[in-house]
Figure 1: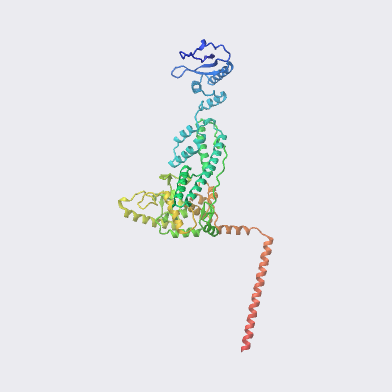
Figure 2: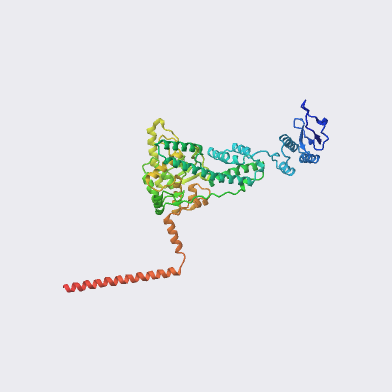
Length: 536
């Protein structure tokens, strides 16, 4: 195909505004004109012509180099590959029209062979929008992805070309997020100081009112209180990006996933601790919880259940405490999947929150679908609950909302999971027991099963875990008496000479004390006999 380099003068006639071209009097000056190139491209599918054109070269050598580059790209597609020829031609037409740099020949060869886009001008933001629009998951999951993309990914890396995204770009992003956390903490501290100062200023007096007004103006100008982006959120942002880039690889848009290789701070999950007497005493003094995840002892769990025995949702608290259902699973459990005659229920769905809206959903994972065995006491509790619900249905009459769920509001409608959590927290506070979260009742159920020497696989299946390691790592909080028994059993396995000697010394001391006690008793007996003889 035809192609050429040529000199061009862009000077214009001041009267007509037309280019002077070859009639420019300065045309023969060495550095006056620039060089341009033009290369014919394969015809479009409709038969129309197109070409690659570029100018502004300062010398013929640079112009010829780019013309050779264009011809090398055209040569990548063989004559028997009409689709490849059209792809290369479209790429060069776009590069010419957008004034983009000429793509590398070898990189273009690899892309052409892999069936990838040749221009690669897709940005990260454009890809994330396309990826999110194609997701077919529950609404709450979509919302979580959308938040990660809108709040973190687009502002930091959305402008970058998808095919040029590197690990270093992601490292910079997470560093910027950490720096932003420091700024948020500083701004929160400033706002807190202003709020505290405002609380100390009296309302009366012109001077005080002026101070209060000035502080309020300053507070209005300050950023609102904000939460920092913690390690768990950063890991979720990374997971969102990694999933989207994996799909881009699957669609042959890119070949490398930098999110799989960037290193960020790991999430340290808080360990569950049991409310021992010592921890309770410290909490009563300071009001501080030793860990975000706290578990009641069996006695404390029993005390709570006794306290809420007359609560309308007692059966729910009982079921979670003993069988470890999740909040959403308990709220969404239908009677149709609850077989009290066979002492079991089947978890097939849940109620989940999306913001403050509630929607019915399937369990999050396959392991969430499970059969949970019920003990006699729990069956009795659920039977009494069903009778009460029947009475409520009769009382409400035609206004009853027939959801078919085990646990409902007074009129039979769905329970709001968020309101259930609020109610539980109020009941715990009223009971006077040390605080735990509703989800910690599930921790407690797991702990009780493990303390009762239930096989770890059965515990894992009851909780709906996909792997027993999850059960061990998260829920195995050892109760005090279980730990003491384990310690004693371990100590008895090791024969210690020092220990044997101590036991022998203790035995001899006990024997000597016993003999002394016998001698003392014998002496008292003789004394009483002598005293009786004198009286006689």
